[in-house]
Image (cartoon, rainbow, N blue to C red; front, side):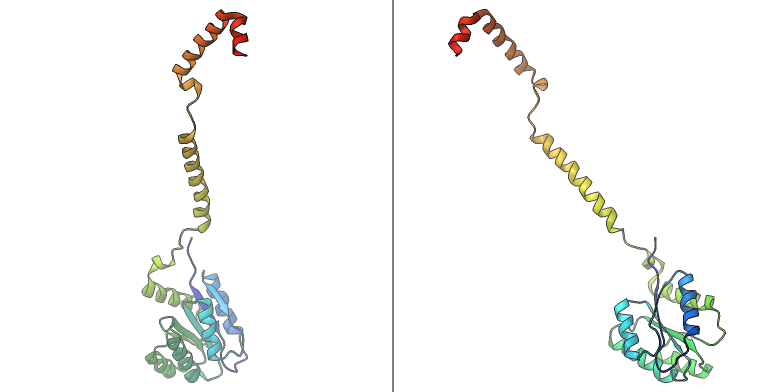
Length: 200
């Protein structure tokens, strides 16, 4: 079993159209990623705080308002201030190619315009993650349930072993004691009732 790449889809600013963001979020989820959608009208600070709280690998912004040259740098700056500047900041919207190039120089990842394939977006995110962290980073650690079940079994085995060490040997395993008991019974029988009275 593998952990999923965690992606935060954000809609910062006054842009009230989120159909495209929801389509991308659904496509990334179908591609095997875990997606958190912030909803409409988020501030850059709210987006970055959500990224921190959710411990995501990728922040993807959807901006159709034309404020991409303000919102992307602001979110990127806050991510660096909060110690998550190594996460991927990507996104899309109505962004001219020259603005995409300028944002890329600032450190923003690849941006996607209208009509971009959701499969291409998923492939880009996965390729970035593999390059940064490697495929083994997706391997999940051992499930704690399995370890919890193994402990009582090991404890029980140790308890049984300790009990066996403490337990005295049974009479069957002490042939000397068994042989010594028979002569006593025979002497008592020969002594008869007198021996019995003396013992009383």
